[in-house]
Length: 346
Image (cartoon, rainbow, N blue to C red; front, side, top):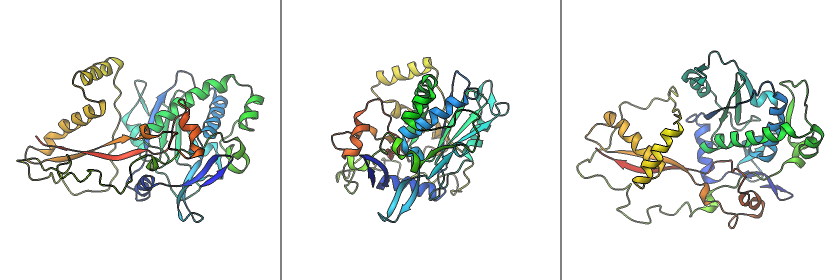
């Protein structure tokens, strides 16, 4: 752990973080992306966007790290990048090809799916694409952020855009250091660790593992009847799949946006039947795929879930207490569970 003035700049990966590192390194995971539509042109106010990006990086320094093997601790670790240029993180695309009726289309999602991040090098592990003037996509590698982080990123950026639009350049430099405000170029430096270390506001997010039960404990507590150990009666065979696994990466999941009215109906039904939204989506997913599984086999499904609820400043090491005590601060990083198992049969 690299610690200076109660701020953690570098630390070893935890067991769960190493799982996501291995998944990226083996090529079995590419990225996740969340696109937000802003109501003011980001391209026309590029200088405000650049200020907001720098502020966001200094407040959430995991954005300025990569994953490398740290010989000093004999482990893979989050390590600060030496420098980040604007061209490393911000890219521009026209909206003619990628928007349909004003909405990001599936071809664009496939285009984003081709993004692959390289670990162990001096490369950033997130990428922003501005489509036209208003649509900004945040694409992340999974070791520095789980699925919630892209949403969090847009929330933080929106807040920082508003603040940076009103703050004078001189006042900004006092708090966040010097920056090019005019005639912005792609090669402009937006972060330099050796120069900007004193402006970093917070520690890296803590690993989730120390806040949970020992990872070596039996999650079923020795119960032979634990729900994911039981083979359903009358369904002795597990579904074998439709074909042998082929590592092609030509399919990606996409998020479907429900309208406010649709969301209200779904939440009302969940409340009526006393189930959570995650359980609802999981069952819908299973029923949707049931025609593929057939009626003669059982299947297992894993549902990822964030574990941020288990963070508490009371159990945290001193450098992390500040960010865990701030209810407004978003915890980036990866605190995702690798999948709670459910067994289904028709």
